[in-house]
Image (cartoon, rainbow, N blue to C red; front, side):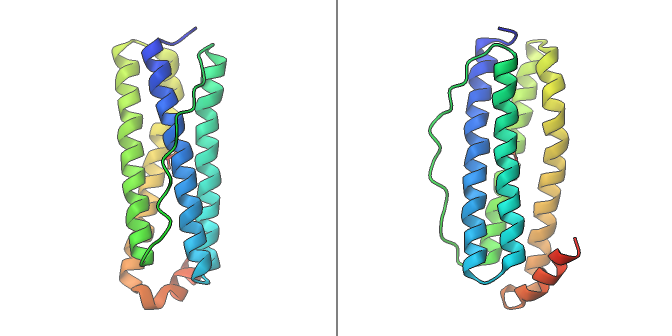
Length: 160
Ligand code: FEO
């Protein structure tokens, strides 16, 4: 095995969080679908797919390094929202939390002089900057538009 047992366990935990993010974004997408906001829904269905891809990148890394894949239980995602703003606030919080965990994995890789994992995690460090920034931007425009003007947000997303 090319990585430590501790790193193996930590990455298994992250696989659970990436799948958790995917499930949470499916629920946010269905909330927007229920509000007849297909562009917002589509954006979150796509985000859910991306989170699944993140989880699978970690799975493949464990397989490639001869480590063990143990996917942990994933908490049920929140399934009801009172507003678009609440859904986006949760998304920003998710991305901030995931960023902290990715940084924690990088701290461990640095402590252990695990160069392969440092290199692998570099992609996620960059990705998190993009994900936090795009969720914060969407939260800001939703706040500016207000819950009664979400059709403007649909038009905005069409031009992204
Ligand atoms: Fe996989 Fe949005 O973090």
